Image (tube, rainbow, N blue to C red; front, top):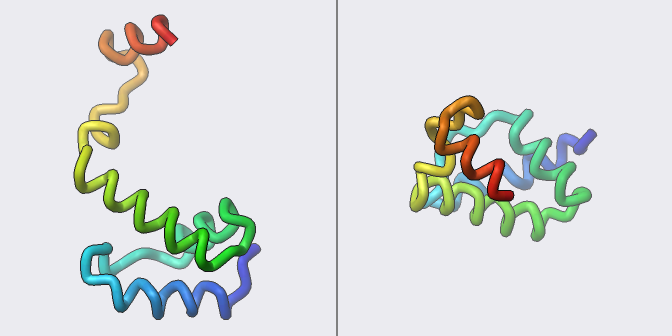
Amino acid sequence: MANAQDIEAMRDWLSKQPHLPEKIDDFLIERFLLSCRGSLERTKTVMDSFFKLRSEAPEFFTNRDPRQEAVQAMLRAM
């Protein structure tokens, strides 16, 4: 579990990033922190990359039904 100070530090950083979403809940921030082993700098890099990819390639994050033929074909190829 991430500590409250780290979550607050990330909230402060996020508030200064106009290109990132304004409202990100604590649970999502905590998940990023945990996946980055508590490193604030790594978490900032990962969050920035994540939201940049979401905005530049939304097709990767929508229509993700694993039963779709296109998804099945990709899974068979992998």
